[in-house]
Length: 53
Image 1 (tube, one colour):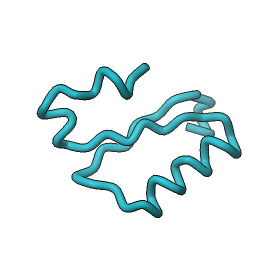
Image 2 (tube, one colour):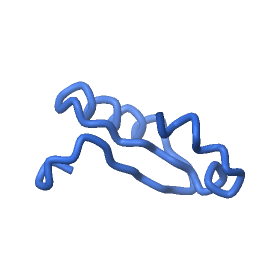
Image 3 (cartoon, helix red, strand yellow):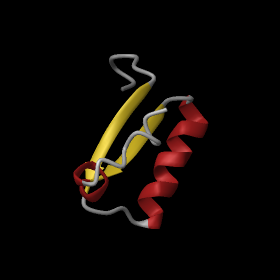
């Protein structure tokens, strides 16, 4: 994201630890670039529309 100067990126995983989510939040606070953390379950349930806004 930083190298290509994108303002939004995506991580996809089966689940996230509190530490991982904290790091994602910290990255946003430092850089202003958003990482959208999606889970496989959210994608399969098609529940991702709320997070993409």
